[in-house]
Structure formats: C-alpha cells, structure tokens
Image (cartoon, rainbow, N blue to C red; front, side, top):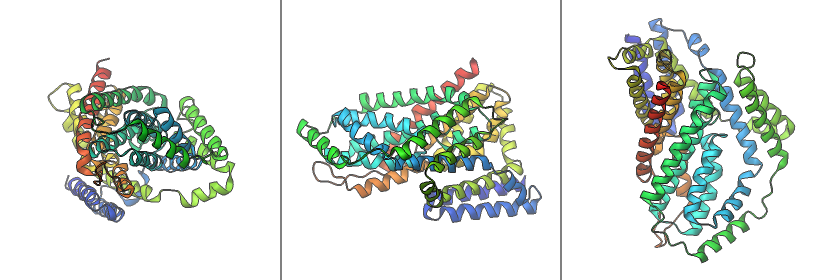
Length: 441
C-alpha cells in the first residue's frame, strides 16, 4: 500500500502544481508521470511499458481527430454568418442575446470541444456587448452562464467533452445509450439555470438598452460581417463527415469497428477532400499540448491504479453500511468536489475505476451518466476548473469593455463565482436526482 500512497501523492502534487502554475503545467505533469513510473518500477507494481500500454490511446485519437474537425468548421466561416443571424433575430436585445448564446453554446459544445466553442463564439459576443455598453453585473452573469452552458453541452453528447469521450472510447457506454440518457438531464439543468438567472437574478435590470443603441449595434455587426460568406468547400465535407460518423457510431457494433476508428476514418475523409488544407491542418492545428497533458495524466492514473489505490477506494465505498443508491449519491458528490479542485480530466480518469465497481452492483447508466453530470457540475464550480474558463478571462480582458460610466469591467475568478456556485448546486442536484431515478427504475 506504500506504493499506492506514493503514486497518489505524486499525482496530487502534480495536479495541484499545474493548477497553481498553469504556465508550467506540461513540465509539471510530465515530471509527475516520470516520477510515478519510477515509483512503480521500484515497487514492482508496474513497468513503464505496462503503464504506457494501459494508456487509452483510442481516446487520444478521438480527441485529436475531433479537434481537427472543429478546425474545419471554424474555417468554413459558419459562425460569422451565425453572428449576423443571431443579432438580427434578437434585435440586439441583451435578454434575448443572453438566452440565445447560452442555448447556442450548449448545442455547439455538443459537437466541438469547449475551448474551440469559446474561441469562435466569445469574440462575437464581446463585440456585441461593447456596442451595447453592458454593466459589470450583466457581463459576469452572462459570460458565466455561457461557460456553464458550454460544459453542459459537452456532457450532453458522447463527443462533446473529454469525460464523455472517455466513456465512449473505453466502451463503458454506447453512443446512442449515452446520448439518450445524458441529453435530457443536461437540457433540464440548462433550462433551470436560465430560468433562475432570468427570473430571480435578473442581470439585465440595470441596463440602458434603448432602441437607438440596439439599431446601431445591429448596423455595426452587419457591416462587420457583410463580406462573410460560407466556405462550402470546407463546410460540406466537415458536415457530411460528422453526420456519417454519428450514424456509424449509432449503428455499427463497437466490437466490429471501434468508435475511434470511425472517428479517424471520418475526419480523414473530410481532410482528404481538400488535400492541401488537410495537410496544413494536420501539420499546424493538432493540439499536442492537450494530448501530452492527457498522456501524462493517464500514466499517473495508471500507476495509482496498478498500485491498488482505486481498488481500495472502491472497496471502502461499496462496503459502507448504507443502501447502494446512497453510496452512489456520495460518490457523485465526491466526484463533483474533486472536479472543482482538479478539473474534469483528472477527476474522470481517476474515478472511472471506482465507478466500474459501483456499476457492477447497480445500473451502469445511472453510474456513468451520473458521474458525467457530477464532473460537469464540478467543472462549473470555479473559473479554473474548465479549460475554457481562463481563456474566457483572457479574451474579456483583451476586449477592453467599459460600462456606461466609463469604468473598466472584467471577468475573472470572483466575478464568475456566483454563477459557478449556482450552477454547481443545480447540475449536481439534477445529476444525483436523475441517477436515483435510473437506479429505482
């Protein structure tokens, strides 16, 4: 058990270190992975080769391939066209914009990763807010709701975010089963959050958004994007490839062709339509930072697992003198809190083995979907818990927003906290409640 404690301590120190020093996070986590390999080798629990062999390479393949597909959609200029459409449809009404962009982000994040969704949507929204002259209160709640909607959208589909991709890639759940089980509770959680924010919080009540300002905003946005035309050469192959992949994931048994191979072939076909662009994307747009981070994480998790730490936690949890549904509820709360502290990737990768022990005693769908929702709740707790949070903070600072009195307004850790606390409570409550219903069914 000493090896288990040592490996767990290394992983804990590495995760805390990369959270405190994000500018050195790759150096910290790769160093932690190397130290975990050394402890495992000296203790005789696992060789470095065994730890590398246990890495879910299929999950990494899917993450890289889906990232490339996201780049194709971005380069098609689809989202610039949607900016003009959304501005016209809402008549630049801040209330409608707030709801529309939250729902839109939920839908987009189900197809592309959260960071990509933020990078393509947030500049448009910030430009709108700069023209409208929003207040600090409105900005904090609006962008906070946007980030939470992004997290919920990622949890709604098996390809939206790392935790769901991990479940699909490792064969814990099938594509259709996860989509049918996870989409409804995430949509309910989003609807509840929007209702509470719009009816109870009412962040738009201090805004001065007269008809003249709205008309001016519409005119400026239309002028900025008047030359934007959809690039069908990129959009059509990306859209057809995504549709074909979804059909294949839903119909082809994973024992015949795995989800990672479907993703690999589908994205490869989309890139091959325009070979020059495809080669450029492969050479320049693969997110190696994220892949290396996850590789190091999987190695550390594997070292802890081989040493028996997760098995011990699973035994402790399943032997608690309480009913099985309560054990599951306690596990989901623990997962949400850990995610808030260490982010979604480490939490999901580390707790999946414990979840497997619970899934052997009750509904696997209840356990795995409940875990995905708990991780989503935790990643919505703090601005630093999700990858898109710090990026949203940086992009808002660069936008140079000011309120109607000329004061600088910002979006950071403390500005996000009220939204994060509300989202954590709502999503976790929905997740635990939904898991209990599935267990009882």
